[in-house]
Image (cartoon, rainbow, N blue to C red; front, side, top):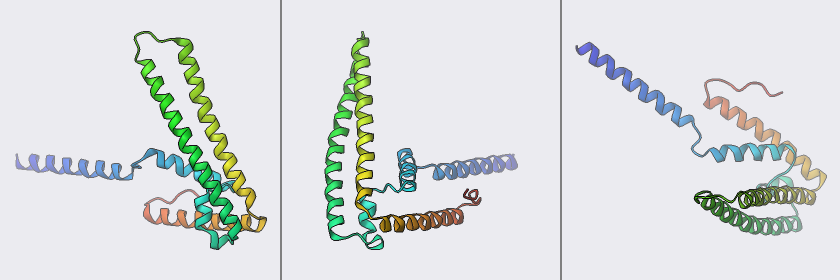
Length: 173
């Protein structure tokens, strides 16, 4: 009987340890992983967020004029993005309330879905234009420095990831 109890306790402890290890490897915020992938994709196309460029201003040699323009563009974009996200949240809340009604007006439902989709598309277009406008401020030499920094940073991330993991990532193509 004692052997059965000890074996059962051991199995339960092993399962708890395995499940906690699996949970620890799961990202806490799924949006974070999505945003990280999007940021990497944009960086591969030499589209960098203003905060990233301002952080690396010395490495890429931003002039005071470039820095001022980038800061102004960043603040203007963020202000617009906050307003647009608030408008989107309001529309989504109204849409959810409409779906809770006893009888749903199909034309109104279709209109709201289109409005929500248009707002999301306009936000994405504004974001890409903002990134392109920031890139247009940079000189070809600064873009080349960013490309070198991106490659070095990617290699460093890959190395740290491999050190923290038992299996290495597949080689880069």
